[in-house]
Amino acid sequence: MAKQADIAGKRGVRGSRTGRPIMALLDLLGRRWTLRIIWELRQEPLTSRALRTACDEASPTVVQARLSELREAGLVELMPGDGYRLTPLGRELMESFLPLHHFAERWSKRIAS
Amino acid sequence: MAKQADIAGKRGVRGSRTGRPIMALLDLLGRRWTLRIIWELRQEPLTSRALRTACDEASPTVVQARLSELREAGLVELMPGDGYRLTPLGRELMESFLPLHHFAERWSKRIAS
DNA sequence: TCCTGTGCTACAAATAATGTAGCATCATGC
DNA sequence: GCATGATGCTACATTATTTGTAGCACAGGA
Image 1 (tube, each protein chain N blue to C red):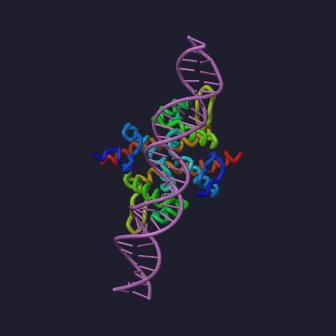
Image 2: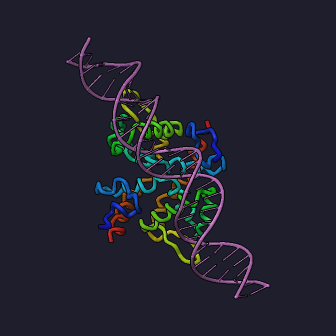
Image 3: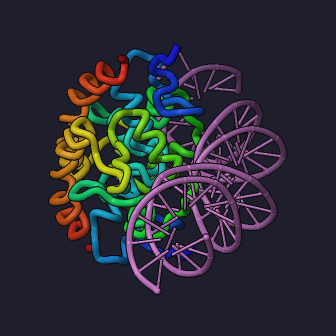
C-alpha cells in the first residue's frame, strides 16, 4: 500500500495526495479514537491522563499517537500546564459534529426496535 | 437480547452500554472506512464493487464488514439489483456531515503553511 | 528529600486490515 | 442449453494496528 509522508505524521493521511481534502479528513477522523478524542475535548482542556480516562481508559499508545496526528493536523494543541485543547480550527470542526449528538439519540431509539 | 451492545455485529459498539448513544455512534463511525463509505454513498446507490472502487480499492473484507455493521445499525440498506444506499436515517446522518466538506477545504489550506 | 502528576515511550500479545483468490447466484446473449 | 459477466460475499495468509502493562524523565509541592 502506498504510503505518503505528510500532515499526519509517519503514516500519512490516506487520500491526501488525491487533491481531495475531504478524503484526507475522512481518513484522519476514521482512525480509532480520533472522533472520540475530539469529542471529549469539546468543552474544556484535558490532560493526557484525563483524556485517557474520559476515553474509557484507552491505551496510552493510541491516545498519544492520535494526539500527535491531531496536533500535526492543527486541530489540537498542548497548553503546558493545562493539557490538550482544540485549536480554533479544531473547534470549527467540532461545530460540524454537534448535530451528531441529537442524531445519536434518535438513532438509538430507532434501532432499539 | 439484541440490545444495543450488538447492533453492529460480532464485535458490538464500544460504549453502547454506557447509555450514551453518542459514544456508540462515535465508535461505529471511528472504524476504518466507515466514514468514507457513508460519504461515497451520499449521492447515489453503489454496488459493492463500485463502492470498493470508490474507496480506493479497499479490500472486500473490510468493506463487507463495514456494510454489515452499517446495515445492522440501520444506516445503509441493500437494494437487490441496485446496490447499497443510505436509509433515510443514514441520509439524516449524512446531512450532519455536509459541513465537513467545506471545512476540509479550509483545513487543507491552513495546514499547507 | 519524597511524593504526585504530567507527557510520553517500550514491548509483547491480541486484534484488525490488506491483498489475492475464489465461490454461488443471477441475468444476459448466443 | 451454454457460456459470459456482474453481483454479493467469503477464505486465508501476510501485514499493520491496537491493546495492556510497565515504565521513563521532568516538574512542582510538601
